[in-house]
Image 1 (tube, rainbow, N blue to C red):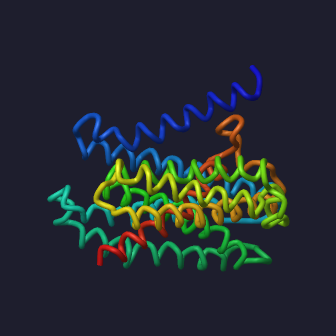
Image 2: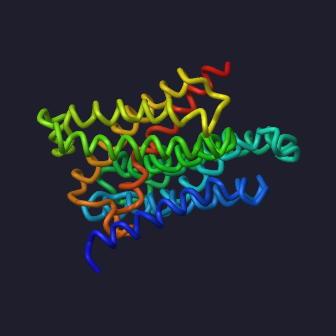
Length: 289
């Protein structure tokens, strides 16, 4: 099977998983089921992402505490996942929200994070703080943004879908514009193929897509708001891609993994989403104050 067909089929499966997980609740008219499936899908994606992170560090010869990386990642995901439980969608969740928040955010997460430091006292490690950093970073870089994606989903399936669409539009048109017009390298040390012309082209198309299509998916957000969300997705998404490229160059690998033939790993496909989602939610929080 040729590489183009493999890449196409793999991409189609990826898009199908994302779209189905986003709209399942609406299609089945069961919001609880939809949110539960969505949370499970992106939890699994996060676990795979942590595996890719620690595995690539191993290839580089850099240590991390793998069990603690997964434990801290799981705890971080569920800690930040309690935020959307405050939604009025679930009466029961509202009644236990404060208790769960206290347990996870105020007790469990600090204890787990500090335990990672304490464990290093018993390990024969010449670079204990490097190990601690690489143990905890996947929780911050991967699991927290994916948990916050659940908050976006509570805002509405349309908003969540638009974030993915805008990231795809930005990536696609940055590539096309760069191929046609690209001359000035943007950040050659980390991503040799990125150009300023491609980045600007991707940003302009991303903003245009947000303005033209945003109101169809989430009409409660006004046109100017969508323009700003388009800009955020483009800028933050591009930075997310550069950060992941920096990680791969540090580890000396071409792709973060091979779970998606022709596309690489989870970090390759979700790098822009990881960076964009927190900033989109920050903007939405500000305009809704």
